Image (cartoon, rainbow, N blue to C red):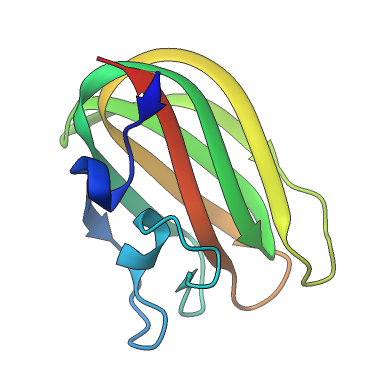
Length: 133
């Protein structure tokens, strides 16, 4: 098992529905908790990551702030996704949220949708996807 959604592994963001010049979407793949992506207001916001290679995904870990409802989908192509989970995260009053989910699916792409937030803006500090080719 290895990290398949980091820039160093070859993963890349292929779609982002928001972009803040100071906190751009590609920061979610750099494995640096000091950098982050910031949403730009109204929800929902989508982020599609092309994994380093198609693989069997076993774990998703996210570090965020102010995310209320998060939807995770998997896909073999960019034109068709299937929902893996739809969760509501607890309100942490602007403090960092850490979520780890054991999953079992095959994918080439993973779509993260921030459907709603606890505040006007939300941040994603890190996305980790663990998988096996």
